[in-house]
Length: 190
Image 1 (cartoon, rainbow, N blue to C red):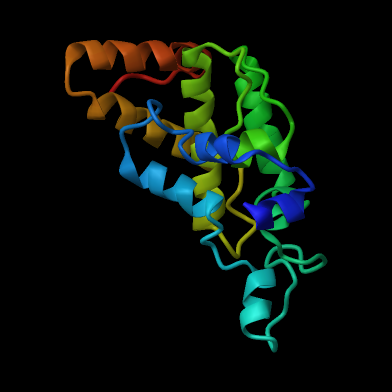
Image 2: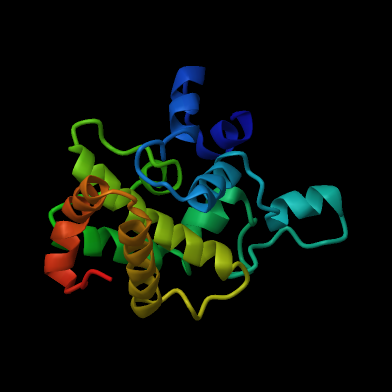
């Protein structure tokens, strides 16, 4: 918590941190999504800045841009080579009527507006998780953070969500969450 607060310049009370760590509760049944979110929140990823503190001979520069310190916030949000991906996420969600704040708290910490309906939070969460998975998979690369890759990853999450529903009522609920996205981007049920 203190490292995130130091890097971001934001101070949050402990109960808020607990709610952010558990932000996926009720939005996904996939344990790997929950685990990936907790890895990000608990700063599990070995960023260049952190590696430099462990191994002083290594560079602390971002693996993508090579110009700034590779802190967690820079690597996941602030790098100018990552920003187009987040802008694409915001653009895609706005086309379905979800206005995601252009702040790292929404995209990295899943600190979504409390005024949103549950359906909006569920859909935005899945799209954000897809973008974050792309960043994690392509840790040292810049060329695979395109709209096509993002849409492919979102489609994969959609199929997983629908396929993981055990009962008909769960499948209906998940389909309702994805309905604005499916009608805008012509996703077909599996």
